[in-house]
Length: 75
Image (cartoon, rainbow, N blue to C red; front, side):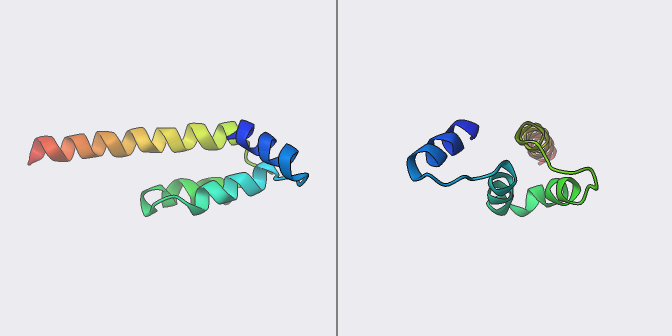
């Protein structure tokens, strides 16, 4: 995502900040990620890094996949 933002910034001459990019990403997520979004955006510790957002979202995705696999086994 960082490379895409760099390319957009270079081609358009406008700057998309990491905060704007992260909010755009959060806006496109399903409700399954709501807890993660609330957790990350509700912190009092300044900005969220792109790496932290990516790691946290990937962890949530792995959790969702695991829960789905358990549901399939129980069925």
